[in-house]
Amino acid sequence: MRLIQGDPAFACLRSRCLTQALHHIDKAGAVVPAKALVKFRPRPRKPSLAFASPVCDSLHRTADCLELEMADSSAKTPWHLWLVGTVAVLFNAIGVFDFVMNQVQGADYLVSAGMTPEQVAHYRQMPGWMMVVWAVGVFGAFLASVLLLLRRQPAFPVFVLSLAAFLVSLLYSYVLTNGGALMGLQGAVTSAVIAGLLVLFSVYARSMSLRGILR
Image 1 (cartoon, rainbow, N blue to C red):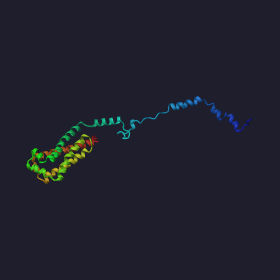
Image 2: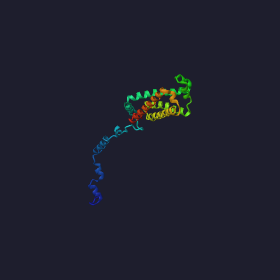
Image 3: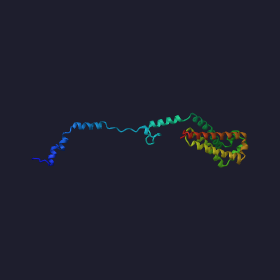
């Protein structure tokens, strides 16, 4: 068959046709770049610590992250917190012991502590609401001391609650009754020391909370 110029088949023959053109492509030259693209394809990068949350996201915490966080937290804890916390626990444990023994042994314990019959009668005649105030004061102070050692923020409000309860007990003894006169100078000095320490513990807990030591 003779092809005539202008026929589409003629143009195809003249240009060696698309199929022939593809046939004459150097296969090695076409495959090598493809392999090179696969070889040098960038690998997915692991998340950088620069983009991680500074406090370690709760869903992606690792053992190393927790260890670093604990070490950093311990490094920020001042030495005087352990001293103040220990003193507070020991001091307020005395108040808890005094309250418990008063409830368990009653007048016998108060007499063994050196109280006069009038002083014993004053304690034994306390109304129920005053016993609740007393319990809140001593147990609250002890709990706040433990929270301070554990570096917990509730230590401050619990100390304040304990101080408020103690002030109510002073109001009862020195205003509503004659307990202040019965307890004498020794009772006044003891009350002043307790109130002063509770204020200091409260201020200290507040300071540690503002500095971020208490969590």
